[in-house]
Amino acid sequence: MTCIAGLVDGTSGRVVMGGDSCAFSGWDITPGVVKVFHNSPCLIGTSGDAREGQLLRYALTVPEQPEDMEPQRFMSTMFVDALRACFKDAGYAQKEKEKEEHDGRLLVAYQSHLFAIYGNYAVLEASTGFNAIGVGEDYAKGVLFATTAATLTAEARVLLALQAAEALSAGVRGPFTIEVLELSAAPSANEAAEDLSALALTPSRAKRKRAG
Image (tube, rainbow, N blue to C red; front, side):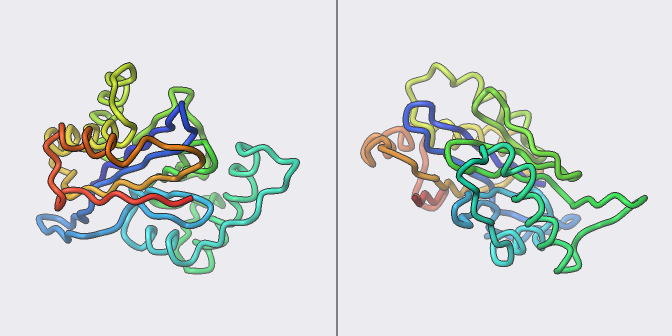
């Protein structure tokens, strides 16, 4: 019961990711659950249960990428190996028919890339430059595709995608958190604020942070 949406800004190479903040259990909800967070040098969004997010945020140690290894290979090998070890050490990993899996899917921003990591630890990078996971992913992807040529900042596009998911899916609920993995010059704070204001965003509905 989640929606995480991410977008690579083709102009600057920075990655913007946002998500909702409620956990669901039957008819009950727990607000204020952090689903998008930084674990240097990555920005991570999780659609699994709360324990998965806690391990990724507090227990996972991201290894250093060798200079001669490209990002896709690094994520598919060294990063996934660290992820598996983290889950195994915490007693979170699942094993069925000698095959390890984990609950949920992840979006991981690394450098100027946005990767999706699936329950079987497969690592994929969409050529569209955007992706989404969770029950609201189809609505979010539709908005991100439809706004490809729009004159909106990446933050505004991600926020609009999350708002669509909330409006159309019972499993998505704000407030939304939007995080940015900065790599180079980004749009000014005034420009981003104007786009968010145009979407009728109030300060209590979203939190926006940046990290290099």
